[in-house]
Image 1 (cartoon, helix red, strand yellow):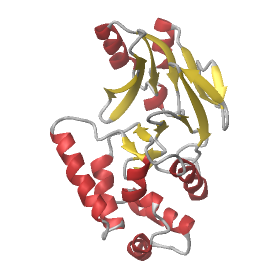
Image 2: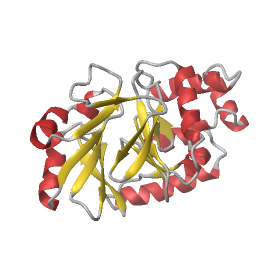
Image 3: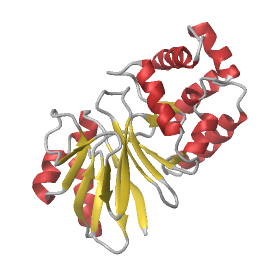
Length: 255
């Protein structure tokens, strides 16, 4: 059976660890810091067999050199030569088998131009989306355009609604505060906020979310909604879904 557990890093990152209960070999996603990964592996008697990388930002790749030197894992990541240590560079439509599961690569430019996500079908389906899709939010546009990010989010939104969404940061409560302003008549946001606040009080992650839940509470996935457009209109253009998205993203940047 495949399990996914978070390894906390820095102030709010999650390095997701995938393992089968029949093997001591594990996979980690976006190891920005080697130290907590090594500590977890040594404590639990595990070894690192593979690494998935979604994009080049230091808090996602900073631990690669030490982990590669120590464990010689298979490293899979995007077609960006600036990321050193990748063995298999993958893009849209490619498939890789890791920890007994077949993962499809989805290109999701916007946060960065090299950003990819890893999706595996099954019961349940799993999505490792880095900094593209957060619970109730999305990544800042450091390199891509609103058009690119909107299209990338649409690709993820099209996945099955029971897909578990493993984002790379614990941003949920801050995102929900913005979501209440951007989608003020949505009762699902209030319910999600109560649930997530309880989780954080118990020092538990608010993740994973699901695609179905994000369709209900994430304003960046609801740019066609009339209530979202009304709320965003004082901030800028809401002529269509893309301009509404751009307005929401700019509003959130300064929220």
